[in-house]
Length: 264
Image (spheres, rainbow, N blue to C red):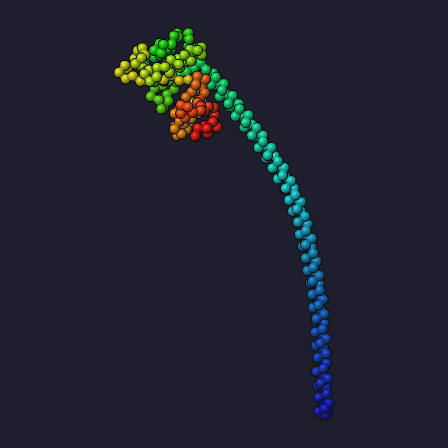
C-alpha cells in the first residue's frame, strides 16, 4: 500500500471520529436541554405551588386579621362602656359615702367630747361631766345626759377623753358656747372632782364629736392649713370643718378630700 493510500485511510478515520464526537456531543446537549427543561418545569411548578400556598396563607391571615380587628374594636367599645359605667358607679359610691358620713355625723349632733381631765380611781364619768357643766355655768342634771364614757387611749393625748351624748342638742350647744367664753383660763383647777391633783392643773377642752372620717379629714386640713400659714381651723356645732387664712379671708368648707385642694 502506498503512502498516499495510508494517509487517506488515516484522514478518513479521523473524520469519522470527529463525526462520532460531534454526534455524541449533540446527543448529550439534547439530553441536557431536556433535563434543563424538565428541571425548569418542575421549578416553575414548585414555585407556582409555593405561591399559591403563600396566597392561601395570606388570605387566611387577612381573614384572621379582620376577625381580630373586629374583636379589638368590640373590646374597645366594651372598655369604653365599662369606663363610663365605672365612672357612674364611682360617682354613686362617692355620693353614698358622703351620705353615710353625713348620717354618721348627724347621729353625733347631740354629742361632744371633753379632753384634758386625768382619769381618777373609781371614776364616775357622769359625775365628771356634771362637774364640768357646773364649772362652765351650764345647768343640767343626770337626766340631761343620754350616755357618757371614757374614750380609748390616743397616742398624741396625755389623757383619754370623755364622750357625752346629751338628750337635747341645746344643752350640747350651750356647753360648747360656755367653754368658748372661758378661753384658755379653763383648767382642771376649776373642777370639783375628788382625786385630781390641784397642784398640777391642765387645760380642759370641749369639742364637737366627729365621726372617724371627719376626724381624719380634720387632721389633714390642719396639716395643710399649717403648711399654708392659715390662721384658723375649726369645727362648727354641726361637725363641719372650716378653715380661714386670715380674719377677713373667705371661709373654706372642707367636706371631703377634694376640698383639701382649696387650702393653698
